[in-house]
Each structure stands twice: as structure tokens, then as C-alpha cells.
Amino acid sequence: MTETPLDPLDRGEVLDQMNLATLRDVQEVSMDASHLAVALAQVQQLNAQLEQRNRQLTALHEIGRTFSATLDLREIYRAMFREIAQKLLGASHLLIALFDAETETLTCGFAIGDNEEFDPSQFPPLKIGAGPVSDTIRTQQPRMVDLETEYFSQNAKGHAELIGQGPSPKSALYVPMISNDAVIGVMQVQHYAAAAFQATDLTLVSILANQAAIACENAQLYATVQQHAQQLEQRVAERTLELAAANQRLTELDRLKDQFVSSVSHELRTPLANVKLYLQLLTRGRPDKHDDYMQTLHRETRRLEKLIDDLLDLSHLDLDAAAFYLEPTDVNYLTTELAQDRIALATDRGLIIDCQLTSDLPPALIDPQRFTQVMSNLTTNAMTYTPAGGLITLSTAVRPQAGSDWLTFTVRDTGPGIPERELPHIFERFFRGLASRKSNTPGTGLGLAICKEIVERMDGYITVESQLGQGAIFTVWLRPAC
Ligand SMILES: Nc1ncnc2c1ncn2[C@@H]1O[C@H](COP(=O)(O)OP(=O)(O)O)[C@@H](O)[C@H]1O
Ligand SMILES: [Mg+2]
Image (cartoon, rainbow, N blue to C red; front, top):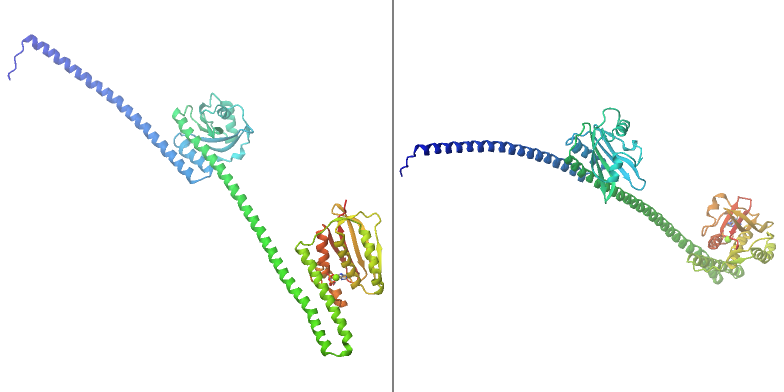
């Protein structure tokens, strides 16, 4: 195809058009260049933001790691200061004030300034009042504060007092720490430079404050769990001790039971062996000694009877099978009755029985039958172990002891007395002492044990006072009926 030549006029027009087109192109190109510069700046800005965001995320991640690695609040606060306040925001101070809504007081939870950590207890608690912390508690809103203008005077002074002399921070962030919809404290980040913080920093510190609130909560939960664990441990230790003591008691009871069984069989065997021997002698021995043999047989059977009676008594008392009927009882009357019953026997043995009764004795709250058994056992002992010519005194009285009045019944004798080393064992089952051995008196060693059981079942107790060669004094302490 051939081109049609242009006429001169047309040529001029074409040239004009060409120039115009070139101009547009140049304009477009320069416009693209300025767009590019703007876009580049935007990209650079975005990149910077991204990097900043990246740094923030890394720092938060670092704190998160501390968070999951430790329950130590101070360790977490330290990481918050190091990773965020110091590294990212260039701040100099991180302070945590804790708020107690009940008492409306603020206490220091953590304070670090210029890398120096302070003991929170050195800051005395404060009532909520005027100031950035109190304002943050009240509004529950995070805020950026220009310390120089807004709170300069009191804050600067406060700072100098608390954290030492030197330059005061000029700008600060105050963020409420909220847990379960309640403000539990305020996190403060302070910077020496004026207007050092931006809105994004406030967001970042808000995240920190949330984490700090959770850390506080965790620490509290942990403390509660620890306390429970400690209480539990203590309970277990106490129970273990109780069980050990119970076990020891059972072992001791088991030992006593074994001892009891072997003592009983021994005590039964001796008279039985004698009975067997004298029965043989009756058939094979000397006929002129028959009366002697018969007397021994009677004595041994009486001994067996007494032993079996005492054993039955004790086992009844042990099994709680013996019924006690407590009633107001005139102990003077029972004493007189007993003395009268024994006077003939005493005279026969060359002993004197004397009664010294307190005239205005109140009635005692006892089982009269059971108590008669006690009086009888004690009087029998006195008469058994006191040699002829001795004096046995039965007396009653009202005596104060451990803050209350007791009614007492006492048997005193002028017999051989009891050696000191025997006194702690005198009420033990089967215990037979020097007096019984010396006088070669038959007995079971159960009389005083029975007395003790009976008296204790009536809410009373029994005591003994004696010295070798000085006679013995047995006293029963009883509850008055009113
Ligand atoms: N009045 C007393 N004087 C001296 N010793 C006594 C007196 N009463 C008891 N005893 C001592 O206490 C021991 C235990 O007394 P008890 O239990 O009545 O048993 P028993 O009289 O059968 O031996 C006696 O063996 C004796 O050694
Ligand atoms: Mg006796």
C-alpha cells in the first residue's frame, strides 16, 4: 500500500498533533514518576510499620514465653519492661500500682526505673486521690499523659522521693489493668522525652496491661492452690501422726491384753495346781493331816472364786457392760455402815477403825452399790496390810481442786506404806507390791485396778499418798450431786 502525500496545510496540522502527543507523553511520564515516588514512600512507610509490628509481635511473643515458663510475677514484669517498655518504646520506667477496691488503697506491685528494680514494700500504700493513677482507676481508660504540664509538680516530686533524684520523665502512658470487669491496677510506662509516645504505643501497652492482669490473677490462683496444697499437706501430716498414735495405742492395748491373758492363766494355774496336789494328798497323804489339807483346799478355792469374781468384774467394766446408776448419795451414811460391818473383824485382828465424817457433806453423784465396792476394796487392803495394833481412819470431806469443789472419801492406815517406785504401778492390773509379798497375803492384784475403773466411770478419780513405813492414804474424789 502506498501513502497519500499530505498537502502542506495538513502537514502543519500533523506536526502540531505530533507535538501535542509528545507533550502528553512527557507529562504522563513525569506524573508516573511522582506517583512512583509517593507509592515508594508509602511502601517504605508500610515497610517501617510492618517492621515495627514485627518487632512488637516478637516482643509480645517473648513475653508470652516468659508467661508460660514462669508463675513468678516479677519475672513477667521484668520481661515486659525489658522487651517492650525499654526496647520498643525507649521508656525508662515501668511501674505497676495495684488497687484494692474494698479499702480504696493503692500499693506498689512492681517498680523499675533506669534498670534499677525497687522493693515494692518501700512504697507505702496510698488512698486513691488526685493524680494520673487514681484518674486511670476511676475512668478505666488508657491515657497518654504529658507529665510536664498535666501532673508535673506532684509527679516529679513523688518520683524524686521514690526513685531518687535526677531527671524526671516527661511523658507517660497509664493503662488500667482489668480483671473480671474490675480494675485491679494501673500499668505506667514513663519516658524522659516529652511527647515520646504515639497512639499505637498505647495499644501495645494495653495488651501488656491485660497480660499483667492475667498474670496477677494466675499468681493469685497459684497462691490459693499453694495454700490449699499446704493445708492439705498439713492435714495429711496431722492425720498420719494421729494414725501413728492410734497405732501405738493399739499395739500397747494388744500388749496389755497378751499380758493380761498370760497373767490370768498364771494366776489360775497356781491355785489349781495346789487344789490338784491337795486332792492327791487327801487320797495318798497322811490321814492325820486331812484337816490341814482340807483347810488349804478351802483357801485355794476361795482364792479361785475371788480371782474369777474380780476378773468378771473387770471384763464387765472393760466391755462397758456394767450399768452405772448415778444418784445423789450420802457418802457419810455408806461410810458409817461399812465401818460398823468391819468393826468385829478389825477388833479380831487387833485393829481400830475410826470414822471422821464432815457433818455438812453434800450428796455425791455416784452409783452407791459400785461405790460400796470401792470403799470395801480400799478398807480391805488397809486391814490386810496393816499389822495388829494399827489404826484405820475412814474420813469424808469437801475439798477444792482445779477450780471446783470435790467430795472426798479417804482411807488412811498406819501400815507398812508403799515404796515410792511402786506408786506409779499401784493401780495396774495384777500388780502386787512389797506389802503383799512381805505379809505373804493371798490376793489377785486386781482390787485397786477395779477401784480405779469404777471411780473413773463415775467421773471421779483416785489418788494415793504414801511413804515406806509411814502408812498409806487412798483418796477417792467424787462429783457433788449439786
Ligand atoms: N494399804 C496398803 N498399804 C500398803 N500396800 C498396799 C495397800 N493397798 C495396796 N497395797 C499394795 O498394792 C498392791 C495392789 O493392791 P490390790 O490391787 O488391792 O491387789 P492385792 O491386794 O490383791 O494385792 C498390793 O499387792 C500391795 O502391795
Ligand atoms: Mg487388794
